[in-house]
Length: 479
Image (cartoon, rainbow, N blue to C red):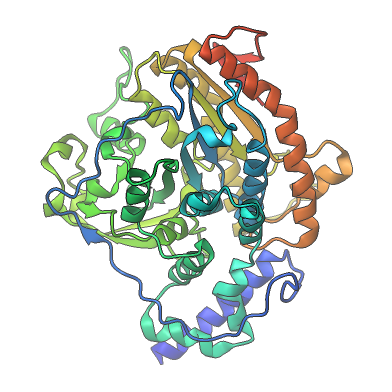
């Protein structure tokens, strides 16, 4: 009886997800995707492993690709296939923007990529396939992969092929874990974080460092899934202020929320963890996808992380990780933490690919109740915009204001009709041909519009002088 109930629930949720993803319109199978037979998967989801002595993530030096150049870091927002596809097209355009030094393109010089949800999918595909990026069809394959209908591949087909639900009933897998299996196929090969580490250390042209961001339900913290060690992620604000008084329990809670969580903080080794699982965890949208489960190993937390330990959390057997957009949908927060560890004189340029739809005032002609999904999406808007307004001031506090800059490459179009289409592309792991075409136009226009600011800021940070770009506060900020 229990298995039958679960079977019916999964079928209904699959149908609901299909309806939601197409905004109440049933489109059927995307004809641009190759035909695919349905069969039960035999993929096995491995439990995250305990951290053994000597297996801690190694120290990393943040060195620009070329000497005397600013360090370039890239953040990619969440937003479903809309964000993943837009990111792939923006990155293709950035590959055509030359650095002012003449040493490669702007994209060539990116050394760290922080992604959230589908933004982490784009980052993962680029990094896993980095060694083939000089092939003529690289960006064609990249964009095609980001346009794949992952919803249909993962669970949408269960509506017309119910036996596939048996995989969930029999194995106990969640839809998020099935999504991880499909993401791994999309990446082109199985890849763990140890594989990414080997790729960096054994290549004459190492790929950027990868960071996937999740949100920990247990503690409301940001989880960083990366090969960087925990000490690269201090809280961006670690003092309550000279004249600020609050209860110790409140101060501890505030500090905990601002302290990013790392695999080693729960005594776990990320090395054997699959990149696809990190992406799926980062994309586990509330209600539609179950949070990812991570085992806690309290006896394996390194002594050097004593100050970061959370005794209450270590009493829990599991942590549950959901969509990184609940904490920060841009992926900027992790990069700000990293900047805090730099010398104040290190020149840094942040590039932010922002595929969030514009936040607009909702005009109501009559009183109505907001549905749960509408409420969640509005919470994402609020959570993304409020910290964004503060990041500039925070970075100016922890870094030399004259040694960093940021450029936002927003998803928008420059005529009303096209922009209206762009802003209404749904947040889902699917994207149709019409929407891909308008994002092609938007990406080219937006990078062309911002490339002058990128080049000028790089010149300023190198000390080449030149025209001053638009500034927000004391930092160089272009949007």
